[in-house]
Image (cartoon, rainbow, N blue to C red):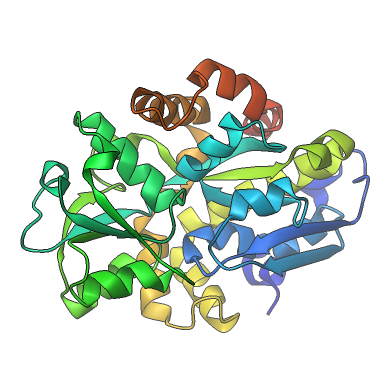
Length: 320
């Protein structure tokens, strides 16, 4: 069943814009169902006049690099991993924040707080990944140096870090999307930080929408229409989480309906309407700048790596 028919959507909302400059868009496919709006948006993109939607398989590693290299046009991804690429002035641009939450820090019996990580082993997907950058910012926030932690990067996939922690090879790891639900079901470890509920992390975006800079410059109408489709899909995730979880299950993005339901229900998908995405970049960039992980100031990063024009226009349009 198509998403549009499934949710009773109509095409009339998109007719005020000029037609898209191109009829095809490439989004990255990653096995993280916190990206539900990106998958749900496929038929909404069709309603926007974008007739060909390609989901480029890319795993969960080096997503900003893929955007910078124009292997895809646009994708949701975590804000923290975007920041070092902005710092290096890679040709990517953040367009909007979508939702908060996603990440949870798990520890073993030796770890009860972020400060307990000093001298401990932390498993991460890879150095420079969102989990590594996020936890580094948390360490900086409590006055610690990320170099005080023994980082254990994975080798092939998203599952490496969780597997290392599960096998007792690491004292902590940062799970996201489905992983925290799986860990709780298996009763392994305990949560020391939940970015969906724990301040200050809950006040900022996790997933943002980023794009190849040249794509947004060459195809501004297509960019606006694609962003509108994804933001509408985020609203659907917020308002109809059970139907969205069923859609994800039927499309095999997450076949386990109960896990998909718990993830979608737990995340604040309406955050795009109210929070300032610039605050997220500034908050994390300040932490990373303090510990020498980036060179540029937050103001410089925002100037060279963000473009909120489309978001600001669509917030006014989609206010009701």
